[in-house]
Amino acid sequence: MSIKLIYFDTYFQYIEIIDMSYHPEKPYNLLSPLPPEVELESPAVLKAAIAANRTLAELKGKSESLPNPSILVNSIVLQEAKASSEIENVVTTNDKLFTALSANDSTVDPQTKEVLRYRQALWKGIHYLENHSLNTDLFIELMQIIKETDAGIRSEPGTVIANPNTRKIIYWPPEGGALIRNLLVNLEAYIYEKDDTDPLIKMAVIHYQFEAIHPFDVGNGRTGRLLNILYLIKMNLLHHPTLYLSEAIIRQKSEYYRRLRAVTEEADWESWILFILEAVKETSDQTMKRINQILTLLNETVESAKNQLPDRVYSKELIELLFEQPYCKVKFLVDRGIAKRQTAADYLRELENIGILKSKQVGRENLFLNTRLYELLTHTE
Image 1 (cartoon, one colour):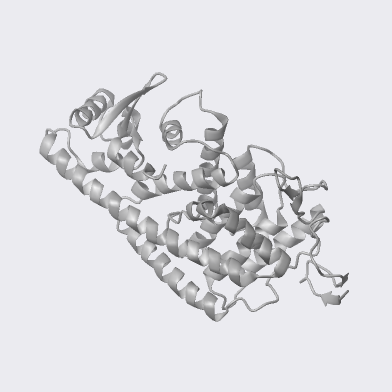
Image 2: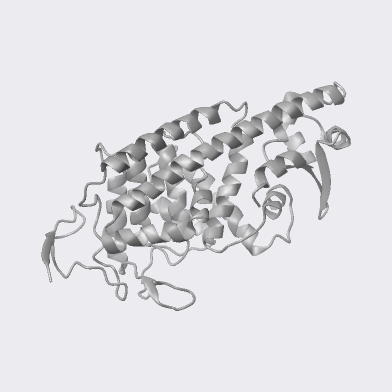
């Protein structure tokens, strides 16, 4: 046994801890507050952080090169919502998502609705950060939007993470509403603490700590992944939510959870941080490629429309609108002030006639799919 005296900042008290080892069969109420009592910036971590920051800065600049950032943001946010939800086994298809985003359809299935709520929560968080900081109230609100609930911080004991097949407990998060809130207050303080730690390294630490606190009965994973994006925007590392980290995580889902557990069980911060930094670099590279593909397709579509559409139909604003999301409809043109209702319908039919759009009936609405954009965004599905 070991005896250790730990100071938990002004929101905690001095306590004596006997046996500091982690035991999955009991609540992890000994979860240490931040910052971690280890050296986070090892040579390997610093080298990876330099590469990740460089690539992320390139992505930030590249996303600003788009004539209309909505061209990328809407699609990336929806793909992030889909992948982050899929990690939690909430599965839908790209077509269901894009259709539900554009149509007034009362038959949308529950899984698709839940993914769309993740998207709603992200935009809520982005607008919230314009005048506020990352804090516990925001964390709760994001979870409530995602899960469509009025629940808050866990107060009842017994929440555990277990193997779905063997029922063996993998992780038992801290219990007690007061303890959970104190840990979250400590997390808030760490987010804004003035120190020399690289922001991407801090993001990895913040993400681990939030998942380890596991403050809610449901929705912790998706809320935690939302915080990654919001933190990068708040730290001015991104202007728009264009880092699609959940794609990298879902490709390495078992490794993601293994690295999280290794921090808890072995204090292996280095491997966890390296995992996140590599995900940032890889995702930034892939997103920049996607931006280039979208820009190329946009330019090709502009030229095709110029050459094939009557002058009364063609406008740059109209073509850019078709790239904000794969499905378009008459109302979108009317709301943007491009044309009145009947004229807008004629424009979309003209675009269908030259092969840029393809119509689809959804309920009582007619949607028009930008087929090449859809193929570009969903080629991995």
